[in-house]
Every structure is written in C-alpha cells, then in structure tokens.
Length: 154
Image (cartoon, rainbow, N blue to C red; front, top):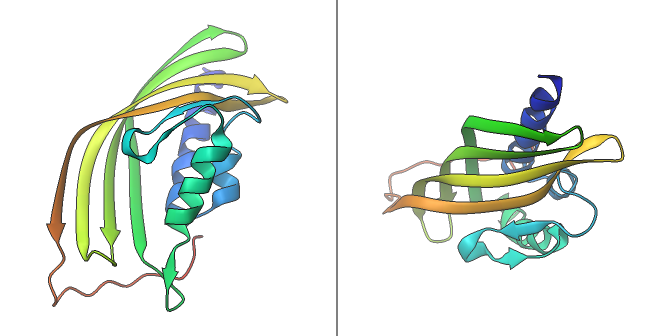
C-alpha cells in the first residue's frame, strides 16, 4: 500500500506541476533518461525532455506578462498494480479543462493515461506515460466573459 500511495502522490505532483506552470516539477516526475511518452497530438517522445520542452512552450506562453493558456487537470480512478518491488503499471482517467485566451476558447475533455513506474534514486518516477483522448468539446468564450489569472503557478 505504501508504494501505491507514493505512486499516486507522484501523479498528483505531475498534475499540480502542469497546472502551476512548473516545467522543472513537471520534468522531475519522469525518469532521467529514456521515458516513453505518447500524448497524441502533442507528440511522441523517447525521452521526457521532448515533452518537457513542449509543456514549457505552452504553459509559459504569455502576452502582456499574463499567461494565455490556463489548464486544470483532475486525475481520477487510479488503477495501480505493483509488478515488482521497484516497478508498477497504472491507469488513470483524466478530466481536463483548458482556457485559451489567444483563440478565446474553452476546451473540456477526458481520456485515459497508461503509465509505467520505476524507482530511480530511491523515488518513484514515470518511465512510460501514454495518453489517449476519449472526447473533447471546444466552445468560444463570449466577449462578456471575465477571466482572471495570476502570472505564474503556485
């Protein structure tokens, strides 16, 4: 149970880093070299450095000193199985919401993560993170909509 709770905490740190626009925290959730990443339209990578660069370019994009992409990740329904003392597999359902202030849209979507985890330097890390989208709805943000956002994450 302790290992499963540590893996859940890892995935929660990952989503908090996404929403807080924290590239270093995001990258630290993956193994140092060789992670298998498949985020569909965002790309496929054989190392987490590639997706970390994509994340940074999207998350840290600002106009007039303010963020223009606002994300909210809610991971639910974890299904984690230990495959050894130092490895595990897991699946999560994602509830995702994004506000794009450049395109003036809001997107609501859901999908499924398929992950693999290993212990590296005494900590659980993701060695595989594949995401498959189930559905998505994008709608315009009306001219009368007020969006308030801080310039950075927590």
